[in-house]
Image (cartoon, rainbow, N blue to C red; front, side, top):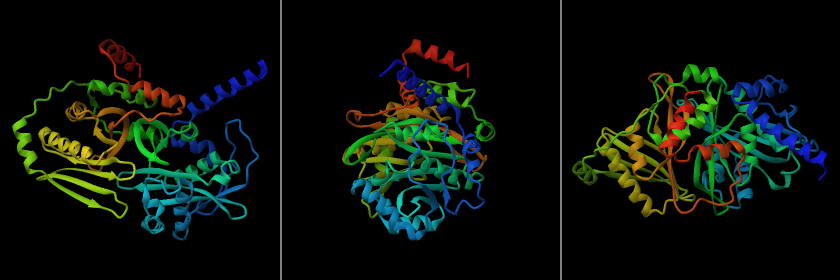
Length: 429
């Protein structure tokens, strides 16, 4: 490589990092790219005409995006069967009937990537949690014969233009779980404002291999965060500070408090509650199940994915810390019996005692997520902290972009001197 070639490569690398930092919100992304999709009805197929602020090849097949219908359910399910060879851990997406039901419900939409000769090259899906005012992006896929022939980045960006323009008045918060087998799945979302904000070590199993992921989030705009985020001051335990520092550097979250709750749980009460706990398991046809622990009016509910051996989608309501400890004791027993590989729970950023209970039971904070939960009473969004657990060694072979590396550094655990440095640094934001 000549000196000139080396300099050109360095300049491109620098440019890429600058571009990643430019777009931080949905509004910024749409302002830059949606203007080139100048048609009134986005449900009609549209061509990917917009220009991308990135040096890249242009020798790609002409590709269109169109909204999928119920009649496309077989196509969508076959995409997952063909690409993952029967190993995809979310089996409902391999089931054409289930995909059809999801589309018919109105809470799910899919777009398909189509060549000018009407060949399907891939697709992308989104679920809408309208009561929570959140959207989940998932399942972006390109069939192998087309991966080097169509513009995958434009297909991804065009899909976001479709979803974010169509639902801009209903869904201001969007999320996606991003794989770590390569940097491309992280780079594309980050380029479009979906930034890594929490780490999910060993969460899933793809192609029969354990793999870690990142939770990536984006928000309508900075004004949205300022006006719609809860006015309550976050209260967090010391180990959460690293995750908070990473998030506030980007979103300027403001005031916070650090607390050190001293738990004094009544063990006799926990033993009594343990004898009273009720367990209900609700299986689905894919060997997964919803599990519910109950103690009177209190409950702890989660989803057990059989294929990835993980537990997520936790909802709990308690009246005492002893109840929470009892539920966690029962949870840990369930995890051992079912050889669970990964567990995660979103814990309120305003309940330091709850955070401490999870911490003392071996669950660690690996992300601070602004505006995670919409409170119907206050009409505002509350912050949450990701606490998770993984078994065995961390899956090897992760490939990371700079933002992902920065997150992993931030969620390390600090000694007392480093905590003081971190507190001083946080005052700047």
